[in-house]
Image (cartoon, rainbow, N blue to C red; front, side, top):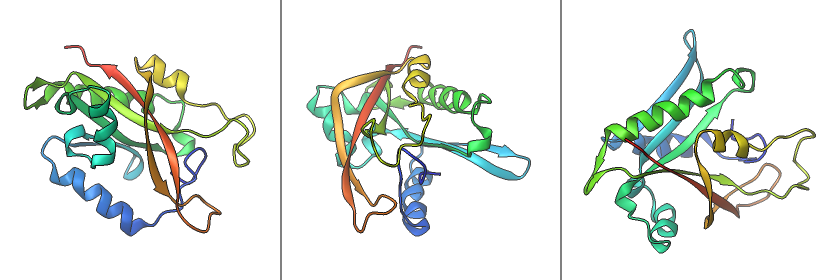
Length: 176
């Protein structure tokens, strides 16, 4: 599902399996699964930011955030035919509910955050009629954290090798 624009991810299942194992290993992580009968049609993950790789934590620490107070919403994937039915909203609601129920070292988590890849409006792989998810994320109460970005390497579909992509972080204060 990450092969579609804007991610264009050309990865392998073995890497993804190893990546997801960390969620199973951390006691505060959550995986929200969407099913149609017995078939999995989507999933969303979240974990304390402190459990993430240093490249995820560094922008927050550098901007003055207490990394221990941030719950990171990682992947959120849903098959195309199931979009627009409220499943994505439910993914955010369930991850927020979970984050509010957890506690960091210094108390409740204050922030929820995630990141999205930055692609130019004239990217050659951008499909006609593509609508970015910014409005959807804003409706969930998230705001683009201007200046809070990171670069992560992966191989795009059609690329010969990995290249660094800019990821823009979005944040939301978690109320109780």
